[in-house]
Image (cartoon, rainbow, N blue to C red; front, side):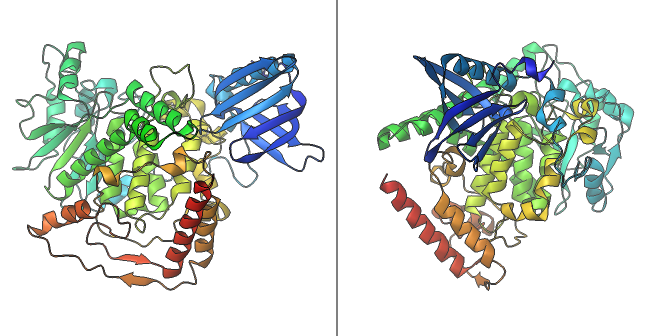
Length: 586
């Protein structure tokens, strides 16, 4: 296919671009194979670029001899183009629609993009399973690196190398894979060195209506637990859904076959319900000047914050089992590539300080989302505005990013990266100039030769001139576990994402930039927070503090020693006040 076949009109003069909260721009509109370009008239001193893959929906309206096109983007931008000439308007709309719907991975922009500062192969797989295993091997000898999936025969959605119990051979692992949906047998996600417990993930077993057994799967899970130990299986489906899955060949691990594993059901939505929730919230945010009652009603009706609360709560449950109960945990739902990864990744952020650094967070995403087989190409094909949504689309990765933002809000000193990184990750998951989030699994990436043919997003972000944009200037290493509050008043709307094109945040952006510029010269003050004496055991004290003070940003795990800069806080407060006054006057 030639891109020229899809472009009916390549250039139109005297086009007016309108965007919410920004001045209109008149200029020449050009369509290329991957971009829309508007060059302002008469001097062309302003050029606006839009990756066509970012377009989620195209709405056209013809009035007389001219027309307008509304572009609803995957990153929630809304752009309106006023185009002179009815034929030109229809041709432009048709061209954008066709180019934004190209299905072939090999025709996407990352295969044509060659940033001069990067080399191909640079930045790919910053933390391959081999690197992760080296960390685990330095702490325990109970796990080994297996090449059972080197040709993707055991599981097409797993990487070639996986970490499995040292006590089982590859033949046992291969047979256990045939007893799990999609071959996703239990693999190590995280080793909690504090007490030697393990976090594993898999897909559902396949006992079916006849209650089939698999001795190899039972052996694999049995060897994880030492004598006298017990483990927990967190099923991300409701008990009813898991029971119904048995009729179609799926199901759960029977207690009689897995006697030392106790099953817990924590229903997390995925698929169409999650996509509809996302769309409803975006519609509510775009409604002009709603009353407070209507806004709160629509926010509650979207149920998005409920999904955030459920995800964080389930991740806390997994972390508590590992850290406080001293029990290993297996997480799975049905396919084990959506809510399962959401829980295992969040649990590691809560437990592991290394995952809260910029480098560690990138490694976590690579390990627990990209290489773990989250189907980005299917899940992120469309965003909130498209009317042509399929059954496979769901904003599971966005839900994860929202949960990470909630953690950063409750623990503002504990994450080395800031909100800008989360926004960039969302944008690139849905439409990118880099190959990092392309395809659905490692097998597909290998067939497409992504490492050899596309630049890596990590390589771009880690350039010094780019990296500083994503760092949190308030960061101070926190070696403690961070237990987030999941009380309703503690879960807030991620305004930086859902309202970023509706309410400009220039005041806060300027404040953060000033903080970054002064972060090396301002002295740090170590604050000791006087905690009131609460009854009950020390183990319960942290949770009681979080419930008593759910919205105070300067608390961290109830026992955390926070560092803040007096001057930075003053700047932020001034910017916040300035921002609120600005919107109050609109």
